[in-house]
Length: 91
Image (tube, rainbow, N blue to C red; front, side):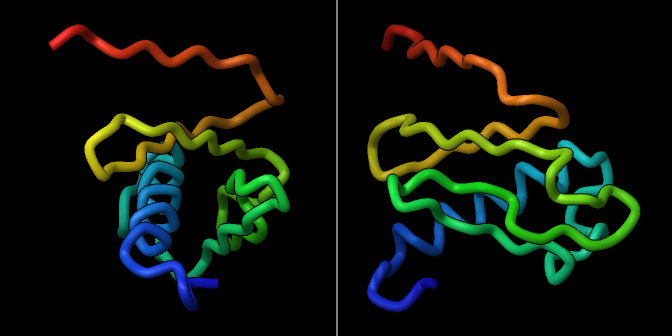
């Protein structure tokens, strides 16, 4: 999945995995190999596979956002799809 995506693709997938393990409450100790992040045709990310006690993957949502200046942020949460609004704080 990272072929041809360079640093930006790596950052997006890393941010998604990190947000998910933090939402699970275990951090990296949960095991990043138990998580597979997928990408939809529209470029949005989703939890494609999740092993371990937090499974199944269908319980979890991830929403990416662009905080600006070469970054990528992800919010991970458990439950149904919800409308999310992101605000940018003034400089």
